[in-house]
Image (cartoon, rainbow, N blue to C red; front, side, top):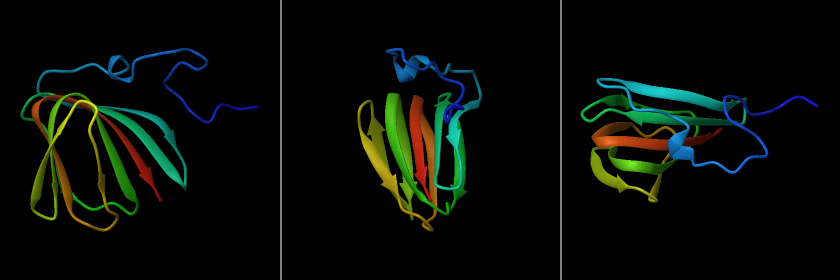
Length: 110
């Protein structure tokens, strides 16, 4: 049976925020799973780094793992702190900004 997830230990208790590192001046991503139905990715944002406004073909569920991120959905800004989540709806313009150093789990459901 082949693994459906990659880049992450299996059958092991772990802390998601420890599975991706910060890199100065960069947005770092680590894909854990990707197929026609779902995409699961870890991201780390150095303070001040961003993913500019774009749209997705699926609903994007974001959970803050560390730090503070600013999520903008159709021009409305939301601050996301550790343990908080938000859904960026399919087809709506959104952006993500590292208000502070920020790590997130992104699950996109297509």
